[in-house]
Image (tube, rainbow, N blue to C red):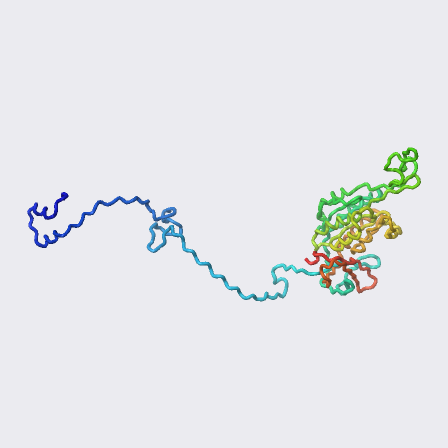
Length: 440
């Protein structure tokens, strides 16, 4: 149809006659003709889908559709985050019920650690000939702490593994030192695979030769003991005249060397001051005790000293060292050699004269800590003492009681162990100082 022509004109042009109804319909305003469709912005294909498209699996997350990429009616869009789930309700606290009772330790199923105030007292019982007495029961023993009878809680006769710190005196004379050197090979024969050993030496100060503990049958022990062998010291006789005197070069009656003049350490021609000997026994025992204090309390802590017992020149005092031993449950054993092992003289050396050197301080350590002491002069006796003392320390009676004293009052508690049988000698420590280790 050309623009500008109406339907009436078209009818007249064609010569057609219309009915009145048709004319009335044509009189109305004609509807406008719609224009051509407007171009719309091009959308990406599959714009409503997210995620990778897998053959046969559709698009989007794996848990979305199965086999079709079309969005189901009523389903949330793929890019719509999932709704947050409500937090589960907090459970109400249940009423606490008492723990179940057990008839025996096997029903518990785990280890329980209790903090107690039990005191461990190793005891050795000997007859009049010095032999160990076996076969005693808990009924034969009575333990008194500070004069009060304490009932036994645990009694045992089982062998206990040892932690032994050997302390070898290198300040003895040459002849004694040679016998000690030859006897060191018998030390390992007195030990079991369950024991452990550390080796210390002393002359003018203590030295740790083993740098810690090693197994009783370890191959390191012979090598460590070989390092402790030395020549010993010379028995020098003071000379105050002649070419070997303290001051043999003089000028106008005086020593040329001002360090050796009269009144000094060497004295003069009429009086000579003998050089003082150095035997640092206290320092050596303290060093060994510090090493032993790190060992488990289930092991028996022993210091074994091979010495003549002389003490002079130590920085540590006897009182402080003994306090440390009695606090950490360390027993001192020993084998006396040299002059202290000689009959008669060995007994007299236990007495101390004021302002003089202690000739035998080892005896006091042994008696206070519950150890044992042998006096041997020959090689065979020294070797046998290693075996006898190690067996004695391993096969003691173990008495355990609960103290009624305050745990941390830092006061000394005396211990007295008695046996209800005549003619027996009881060897035990004289007492102890409380420590935190006993409460573990």
